[in-house]
Length: 342
Ligand SMILES: NC(=O)c1ccc[n+]([C@@H]2O[C@H](COP(=O)([O-])OP(=O)(O)OC[C@H]3O[C@@H](n4cnc5c(N)ncnc54)[C@H](OP(=O)(O)O)[C@@H]3O)[C@@H](O)[C@H]2O)c1
Image (cartoon, rainbow, N blue to C red; front, top):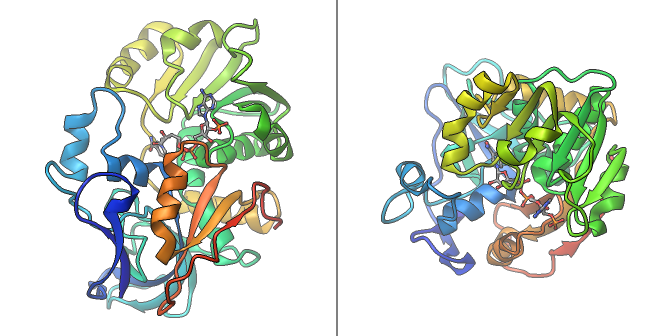
């Protein structure tokens, strides 16, 4: 099978297409013929060993010390079940699914195996594979963090980094729960986040969201520049700071800050769960969750896809189209800064 492989850490050019052995499912595994994946911030971080301050040693245990432990990137997939192990009961060949591979990676390939106990769910019937895969990485992360707090009608939620994969999901999920949502992003993405449900937009290139007197019940930081010390005065009593990304110091201080302040400070997404994917699928099928696609690249153009993600300003998701047996072509890449209609 064809796969995008990287055998050393470095820039986008370390990734190249190789022919490698097609995996076989174990007893409890589902073999998926991948139709789409995304190039995510996690792929960028793993490939370039670009991790927040203090986390280098810890991250090396997972991504590798001298060379990558997982040679195929890609944390998410949308595809078709090709075969199942003898113990698998919930899926049969031909099922259309989405799945979060998480730290196992492996989505940038024509086939991947997923354990049946992993985060896997039926693909939304109303979405194509390229749209459906955008629910996974950002959606399951945003949902995993929001599950830790109570958001009800009128809750004030601020999403910092609202235009990225996690941010666009967090804005939509908080809105679904009835929150008043403030989105922090650059001005060019203001219309996008408003269309996803943001009630107020703060352009971070002009204004500091901690400098006005507004306070929030929940702050979701998808940028890594909103540690508790910076946002404490912007958090209501009993509120929560969800650190989707944080340096080591922020992670280590979180539980003490929670105890002392009476506000939840969480830097953990928790376990990736199929229930959370199923929730996103149900929302998408009801037309209440919109995929946000920045660009779509063919697998053969994976280096270009990485270059775009490395620039740090992608909008929502960068999708890899993976077609078994497809040749090399560059024409697929398309620019579309607006969310795809559902
Ligand atoms: N804890 C976890 O389990 C977990 C899971 C997934 C991701 N993450 C991490 O969470 C972070 C976000 O992931 P992602 O996939 O959403 O990344 P992303 O798609 O690359 O989005 C990041 C967004 O942040 C915006 N941004 C940059 N600087 C900003 C600033 N100063 N203020 C506000 N917005 C700013 C950028 O938009 P502009 O173009 O407007 O600058 C960009 O769209 C990454 O660091 C990722 O590694 C953690």
